[in-house]
Amino acid sequence: MQNAKIGILGSGDVGKSFARAFAAVGHDVMIGSRTPEKLADFAAELGERGHCGTFEETAKFGDIIVLATLGTAAEEALRMAGVASFDGKVVIDATNPLDFSGGMPPKLFVGHTDSLGERVQRQIPAARVVKAFNTAGNGLFYKPQFQGGPPDMFIAGNDAGAKKIVAQICEAFGWGVIDVGGIESSRHLEPMCLVWVLHGALSGSWTHAFKMLHR
Amino acid sequence: MQNAKIGILGSGDVGKSFARAFAAVGHDVMIGSRTPEKLADFAAELGERGHCGTFEETAKFGDIIVLATLGTAAEEALRMAGVASFDGKVVIDATNPLDFSGGMPPKLFVGHTDSLGERVQRQIPAARVVKAFNTAGNGLFYKPQFQGGPPDMFIAGNDAGAKKIVAQICEAFGWGVIDVGGIESSRHLEPMCLVWVLHGALSGSWTHAFKMLHR
Image (cartoon, rainbow over all chains, first blue to last red; front, top):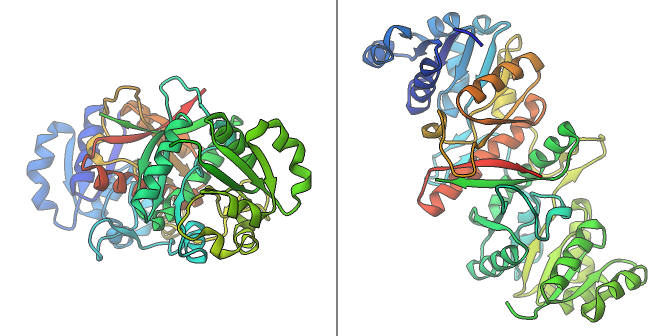
């Protein structure tokens, strides 16, 4: 892809990271904001490829648009940019519907209010339920062999002692372990199953597994 | 963890994979079903550590219980096993709320009926929206350096040409690419953001990224 015009809606850390990356690979970049005058210094840092503008100017500038606002601001930014500004264009939606109103960690404000893991814990309230082994096919449960392995199993549950036991089981089976919190995090692990399934369905291959890389 | 008793609810491929794995690492296993007599041969294959029983017998047998039924059968299996059978026990919930009634790929029957990615596509219907760059922190967008890398970016969108362009961008930035289907798959990628966030919050480190390992 040669020298495209990239319009970036949102000027927080995410938008700025996109702007630097697109400039670094040789594209012309406009970063957009409600208050573009605050971005003049940043745009200048990008060199001659860097520009700043309103949301509308930025959307009209870009052949490719990146939506990089806070999730809560995404729909308002599109409205301000003007719906017709996007017609036919590639729009990279990098937003997440994060709700920080309850503090950390955030929740999702679109979609997820329950999970089968939570239903199971509610049905057997005196049990110490741990969601695990739901993000990989059963053919991979025991001693999965991958270049770059071992893969990681994601676990969630309310009881720390139970998670420790399940982590030992995962490790004995040949998996790394990533703890993602209480049983309500099943809301996030159950959709990950579908990422695994959809990649299998689209690639026609079922021998894949998630790993969390660390620096 | 030495020689525990493991009760496995569900005798499909998932339950059988668990039974073989737990037997292989030296635990006593009972696999449970509505029709345990059909499992006698399978239990015998596991050797002297292998047993089969009803859901109730299996739940009472296990110090650790694995829920490995179809998602649609999970709550009925718990009811048949008897809620009190689980009191104080570690329960590994490996189920997923998969609804295959509409064919492949399945949908989730708990929770997910919309996403911010779909909202964005609806708001700018003539744009070619691709969900991307939402499953990693912005500090990692450009040339992420990992042992075992490059990490993978998960993308979803309705327009194949747009996804091809976004895939080229991901690759230029130093990422592998996993296509997980139409924009409705944002329902699964947005929760993956929270898996990334929760691991950061619990580990106190924010330099991690997903990779899909392949054999």
